Image 1 (tube, helix red, strand yellow):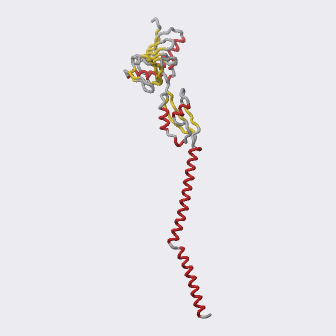
Image 2 (cartoon, helix red, strand yellow; image 1 turned 180 degrees about the horizontal axis):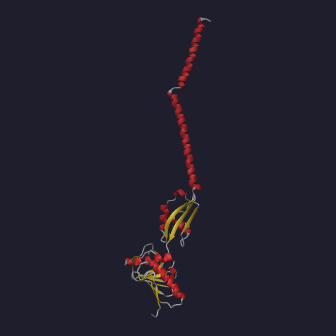
Image 3 (tube, helix red, strand yellow; image 1 turned 90 degrees about the vertical axis):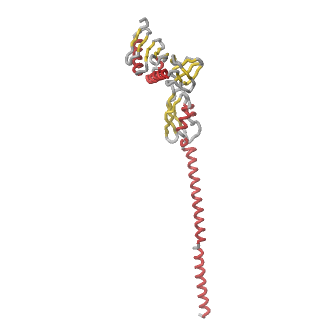
Length: 280
């Protein structure tokens, strides 16, 4: 091998090492690493965006189909229809159960003069149960501009033009200062309203509103009742009204069963009721 051949081989070998070294050096430069990082970042961003879109689609699907309200049950209504109560509650349209707010349901139902919202319960993932209490008309109050229907608390439920054919007893002796539908009666003497409320609430508990045709509260300490067949009962004041009503109802049944003539009953003392014939 000549001297020139040896030199040529050494030069070629060093050139190869330089090319390999240069290629490796180029691949490990900061610019190359940066390109790799940017590419990986773009891939991660696309993956995150796709995942977010999938989550949003799942949420929309839950709201529109799976969690959509399909059944609404109403408990406690008597005269007000189920459909009207559902409409008042704002549940008469397609709605997700996640969008139901009890505050809104309460306000909607309580806006009806005859309804009180009690509570809202969830039934599975698609059903609701609304519990309400319906105000019961108790008496007719005749005023100069019409007849007002009152509940047991003195709230005016309705005003008519003089129709008394509703089976309710008449409220007499009440000196009303203010009457308006949806508002509580305001009397000249607040004791009259207290006396009226005391008697009505107990009658509701004993379920005996239909047993009487008139209640007079002209004197809060000297109230009296009249039955449809003409018996007059002196109630006296508001003391222990439960015992008074319970006792007088029992005595009325006894007097009628014995065939006594229509007379008066003194129920002013709780637990005692004395019958007096009309000719005495």
